[in-house]
Length: 129
Image 1 (cartoon, one colour):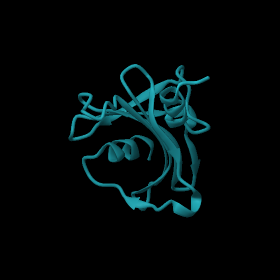
Image 2 (cartoon, helix red, strand yellow; image 1 turned 30 degrees about the horizontal axis):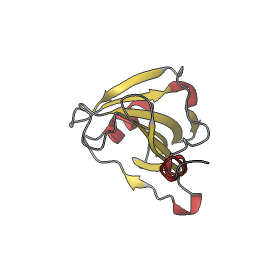
Image 3 (tube, one colour; image 1 turned 45 degrees about the vertical axis):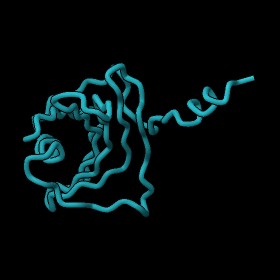
């Protein structure tokens, strides 16, 4: 019999979204946000259609905070002309590579938002556009 706490932890464990770049993925540095957050893009994941680009990005905070997040991987759809970003999927990791949270955003729930200056998102946008 599985102990109740073990069963609960198993159910709460996040599962990374499909298509997430693997551990061997080559991440190219994209820049640093004003907060000190370092950003990289998975060049092999880049898909371009006109002014729109889909790509996986990884950001790492300058220091691991109270939330334990050491890295966040996101799948974005950037519009280079409109300077907007639309998030498709994400996963957050602790310093040991364990998944803290993960998910995908349904197409009906996605919204393109302007990319703010000085953010990790802007560093990603500049690197791929």
